[in-house]
Image 1 (cartoon, rainbow, N blue to C red):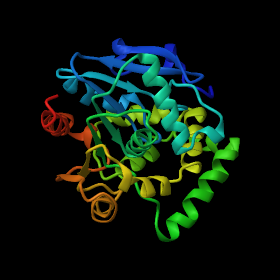
Image 2: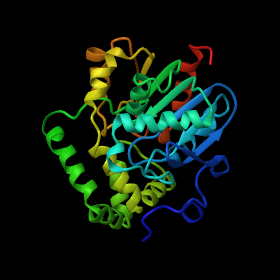
Image 3: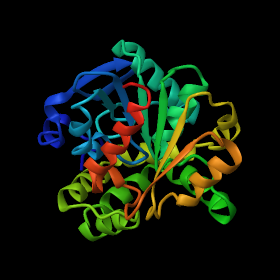
Image 4: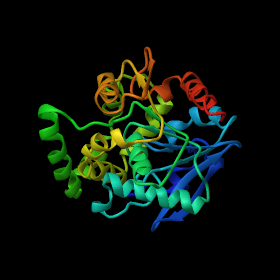
Length: 293
């Protein structure tokens, strides 16, 4: 099994491939998808995912926006940075370098899961200044209790052990394992959606980068920074999300950013934008309309 995904082999049928390009920024070679015309909407996927997760969602939004969606550093077809630069500020800085290289100024930004945390950090650090920020099932607060004491040390251990990423990738040969992983998010995907996650996880480089990102994660920075966030924040939450509890968004609004607007998505899980792309895209359009976008 090759360590990295190969664009000519693994990307031969990649969703929205005709909109893909490769861009050098921040010392990395990025896979970026760009489509549509209008106000600029920057979208960041979460840990372990890629641009494939926008496969049906992006074309709907591209009817109204210039949409820019990269594979995050180390994910899918974008180069991996050094381990210690996969921190929250490090990833935000890479996104800032990419935006500068592309010569765009995002009017609206949307982050799924960990992508939302990266965008908040990018706003706090001055890399971007959008009109509004949409967190879609955002992972914004530190793990509490036993998971918080166990999860990060485990991720550090696995990220440093090359055999661990190869083991997880070997396990990904089992379709059942991938299906259980997807089901654990509270979302129901079609077989093709599951196929793409299996393709990703069969790459040890992708798995290693996902683990490195989790190992370097300090969501305490977001917890401390949220009260200082000047960008209007929208918390869009799948009410069946079993990866990031919907209660976390309520905690964000109650304790850290009371100006945030909370929007529930009944019946949808963590991968809401993959389950019902048009429904979630309409939520984005309604938010954008409030700013004349």
